[in-house]
Length: 124
Image (cartoon, rainbow, N blue to C red; front, side, top):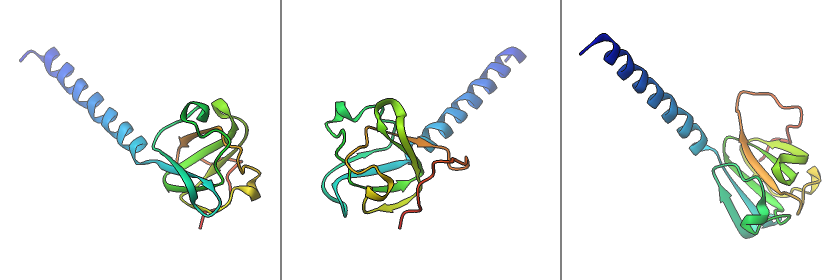
């Protein structure tokens, strides 16, 4: 096999491995939003970014949240605008204290190692 073909093959293997790592990191992030306090009512679970809950029929409905994996930015406006808070893994039985009850319009996973000034309280 010519040296150039070996370099291309090695490069492609590396790119495939990096893609798999990136996909698996995103796949492990998961959040479930509940319609009522105390994890009651209709639920919406996602493992990826949702820029507008209007399309999912869950806009301005969440009252409690369970962050099962990763950290998530939750915002009261679509496309990650407005008042946003980063939630860590844990259970958030009510969003009232954060001023987000029945207000969430978008969510997205964020880096676990990054520091955010708008981090919410730790979940229980």
